[in-house]
Length: 178
Image (cartoon, rainbow, N blue to C red; front, side, top):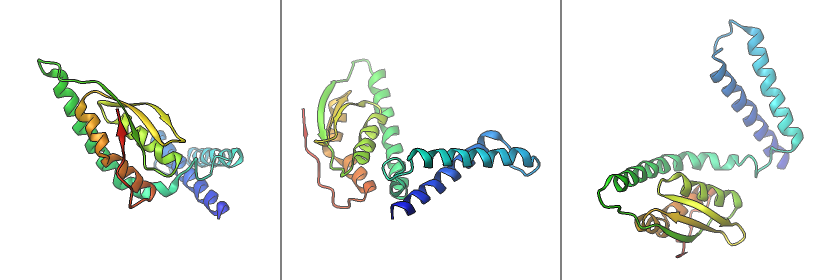
């Protein structure tokens, strides 16, 4: 099973590197066969190096997260947009409507990669920054620009959605402490 996962990860790396090479090189036709051969050779070399270095495992290449992650990404982008508007509104208001807060949220994710996705999602959302994490206790220390931002994290919607990306359909609501 591990060898099958490794082969699938290698195919993913090869196709990704080759696709990026095509996009960045601008050679999308077969009019320059030598350049295309160099692109295929480059993608093969990168894939072989990743294989040799042992980088094609479940932790480094969490391919199982991609299908559910595709449903999570639009929601996260929407949250980023809403947060941008909120931070912009607070920054442009006459009275400085901020209440910086440091809180600790507990992630319900089962793996370290799930907790990393949660911490990065918090940081990507303007107005909140993950400043420390304890993977063994599944806790993330967060700085929030406002109490509203902290309350949104305490509500746990982002935590539940990241847990769903990881495959947990019954994630419990999180607890938080100030």
